[in-house]
Length: 154
Image 1 (cartoon, one colour):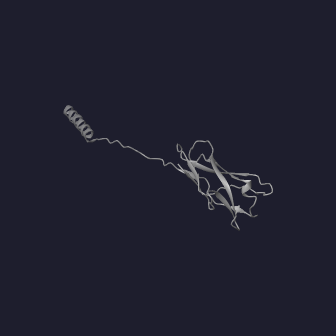
Image 2 (spheres, one colour):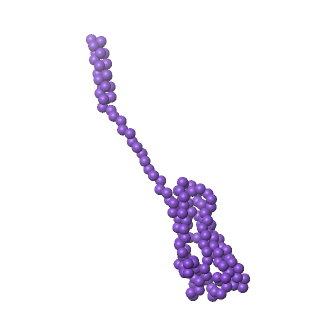
């Protein structure tokens, strides 16, 4: 009787295992995501200051400033500057804050040579410009300003 009981139990185990094997299945799960190419300035403002322009000297004056930006690793940035608030005669101009006189200037944007590596590795953008002596020697004394919007895209 013991022998038939063992055969019975062994048979049941085999049937249970076979049933389990027949009821199983597999599924392959594909997991995906994408990283968006992004470029951002680290601050909302920057400055380019030519300082005091002395008409008695009348020399060309260079100015320089910097700002920080970052881009997603592996992207190439495109930097641009609009024409400013006082664009006229095909030139960017600073305008006398209490009048109508304009002083033209040039603007250059030069990013450092580092690779884009994300927000943890900001890069430096040098903002350069020049005012020609001949463009300010006959202007009204006072403060001149312009507002230029810089943009950056991946």
